[in-house]
Length: 183
Image 1: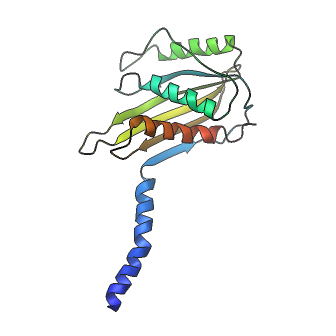
Image 2: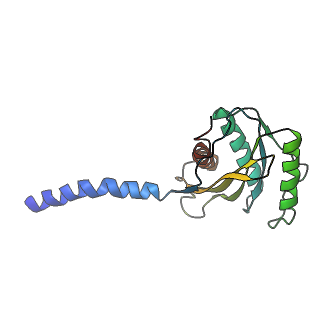
Image 3: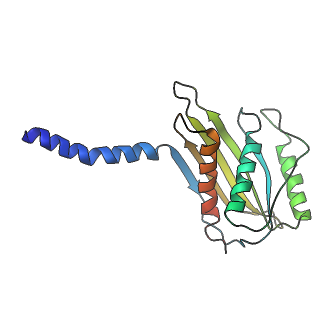
């Protein structure tokens, strides 16, 4: 009995740590230090690059980011509406489209622009088909074009979780860190 109780005592210590390690492996993020931003300034959401094989993944992430900026209580937020769409897996016009969007943001007299890229937005192949999202975000000073903050992250969920929910959680987590010092 004393051997069995010792094993059970050790398992009580090891199991919670193992569960935490398993849950921690589901998300990875890297963020720059939060810049001091004016929360009530005018914001725009510029096009997100789609580096995935999932059609319109960039548009989906943009829509989520726009909603989350509103939810975070930032000032007015507008979304750049492009007349062109990324159709190819390799988009040579991505830089030109980003410059056009930044010019539009200047015309709107926006102070900050949020942009980014989607690197993963899919259900993983396999028995469970877990949702996985990978996103990079940037906050840009519109007047100067200077990047004030960047973050990158990846997150996967459980098989019964929606891909949009995993993407929303990831973008929320990244944005909260970027807006932490906003006043």
